[in-house]
Image (cartoon, rainbow, N blue to C red; front, side):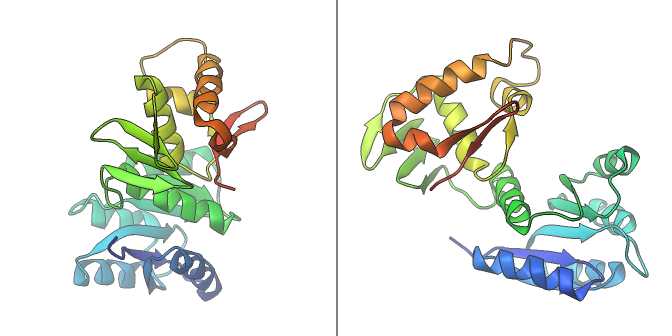
Length: 224
């Protein structure tokens, strides 16, 4: 798989290093900018940036202005980082075309998991076939195999497993799963997910343990 380049923009050197270290462990190439103007210059100089992690409060040009400028020319995925967690800030970010919005302090592992999930969603990192923890998924053939043996899944079971794998490490509410697997105009009982998860786990055998229950919320796919 090609090495993907992530632009990390934050005026705090310590924060940039923290994020960079975690991204590099996962095989990403990282370029850094310490203010908004430098971020814009780097983005247009280097044509192969796959995703931007962007702080809001910065000197010279804040994150909102950086986002506005880049969105005039590019749909590159953008994750906004901010110390402020007010709803109006989050809404402003989404109006500007932000893909994710993460409040400080945050878990670097969760940030990296979100980076990977966004890049999968935008088809930047994955082909139609990928493997994790002994589970191989071929999206084009709609086929799943575990340790080399094919397993028979229904259409929704396949879509559910694929969604879990593409968002591994992230806590997913039942509502979010419904919105993404059953689509937004499904108004059924969210507990239908529990039934599908139970069947999916059964068909996956020991690998079914990768699907963790988060009581009162939903599920998380995590390879042991």
